[in-house]
Image 1 (cartoon, rainbow, N blue to C red):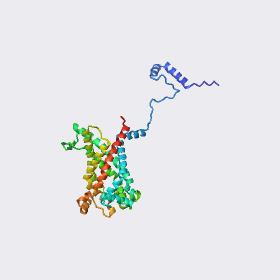
Image 2 (cartoon, rainbow, N blue to C red):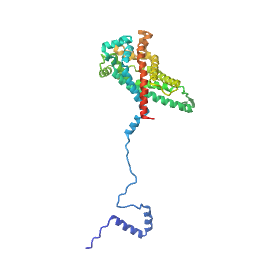
Image 3 (cartoon, rainbow, N blue to C red):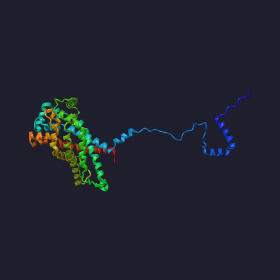
Image 4 (cartoon, rainbow, N blue to C red):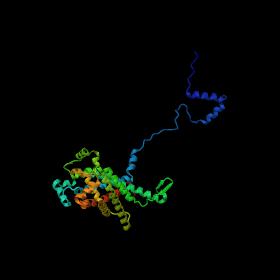
Length: 370
């Protein structure tokens, strides 16, 4: 029996095959081919691919952090904080104003004030304040944030239009340029702010008025929600939305336009870039007074529609509510409660703008330090 030949390793076998090929007729071809192969290729080592597939998950934490540091977020937070702080301070005036507008109790400010204290105690002045704060936080955040965003967008668009890239109306072969440079970005932004805030937060306004006007029928927020839904469904939470939107347009437009115009004029007259806090307080109060005076009759009609069901008579629409007020109380009835409204609107508007500008300076400085 012949002895078994010794086993060869893979590298030795490959060397023998290489020698045979290099000595044969394919030697030249093999030599030329080996020159193209890598020098450090070892058949016993695994061949690593030069291509490596890596899956990198998105960094949501960093994206969220970048989002929180944006200017828009700072403005929304400033509006929310300013609204909450203002309502906490001025809740008694809001209670008196609502009672007088809807015709509940005494017809003068001092009498209504004493009446609430006698019937409900000092805490009655803050009736519905919890829902009022819950309402004002999103409302002020949406309104002031929307106002700043739309104002910047409109200002940027008008700058482009002045360079000859204005909007055009194409009708067949005819092209008509639309000169929209006369439109005030502040007015458009103010209207957008008021409408957006009203649409989103109107149900909270309805709840706040029900809790303020009739605490006996609606002792708590959960009971109020259940009773309103049972009486009218989802639509009951939007009672008075049409007059709210109609009344909000002139009020919000005038309110923001007056504040921005007076602030700009004051800065130019005193040759400075920004106002101090007392000046913001005064200008904000004057803006609220002007806007409230112009739109107050629509506010009366809106309140009538929102709480009319409590008195067993609810006008079908805003025109009917206005006619009802004029028929019962005359033209002066459209301004019943105007004094109480001004006592509430003026400090509320002034304090809101003062707090808003202060919070915006703080938050924007933290996000973009000098």
